[in-house]
Structures are given as C-alpha cells and as structure tokens.
Length: 28
Image (cartoon, rainbow, N blue to C red; front, top):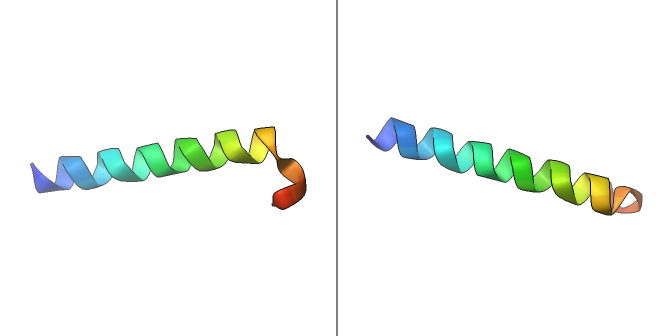
C-alpha cells in the first residue's frame, strides 16, 4: 500500500508541474 501511495504522490507532483509549466512557461 505504501508503494501505491508513493506512486500516487509522484503522479500528482508531475501533473502539477506540467500544469504549472503550461500556465507559466516563463518560469521554467
């Protein structure tokens, strides 16, 4: 179960990073 939580957190972080890069590309 811990592995699933880690994978879920990583997926969320990647999704947030991609959205942030799309909304504010000048920051990346």
